[in-house]
Length: 356
Image (cartoon, rainbow, N blue to C red; front, side):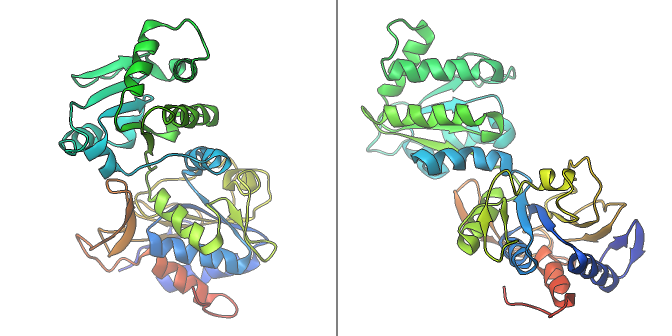
């Protein structure tokens, strides 16, 4: 059973699909935004955007690109959550929003014994945590996001021996990090700016001059990493990619969905949020096709879709293992998936269905 609406009025799924295809066919530039969906949904959305010369942008692109921009400019040392659990004898937690990004971070990272070849006791440091309670045994340096850039800069300068005098807390932390056998820095880019990410990657690089240290950037929600990987193998680029000139182009400013809509460059939007009823934060109204789970939008064309791994089988990025995993539906329903709805819309466009 499908829940479809046009401006809040219930319609059949076929009617909503036909109207969506009509909007896209008449559009000068359509953006496929949100992109909170599984791999099949991402592939379908990217293929349709390419077909009609649109733009793709994930709702968490800001956080995603903070890490990616620095990685592609200077490289990075990164590891997986499982590797951090079993080999990380020294953990450096960065910033105030880690528990928000990974609610069971301490249970996951601290529950496993260290690998025999690492041995010893695990030490955990937290640079500028939030004001909320810090677990016992975790040593803190600094408080809150406001202090983070300065503390991170001081820590990097201390490790690189670029300052003669250092606050004792920073000097002690630098010494502990340099003594690690396998150190792991853990952060969420949602809590950092691009300069802080760059300093962090530089710190990890300098620590590797004397020991083995790596990074664990936490994945944003809504399958952001999975969508990024699908975009990478289909287009060669992460989200904020456009197809208007007949080939894929990536530009974080040009293809920012919010900017395109608020500046009047885009005249139609497809908003995808299969993990919940998240709404776009655009200040400008634009004809919109919403494919979302939960409460339906009251304007534009709105089609209810199933939640991956709940209503239908899915392949998604699993932040606990750092890889794509196949998951069976836990409450299988006949609510269509994002991929199903996009396939229907594609078939209703002039020229009919194209291969994915």
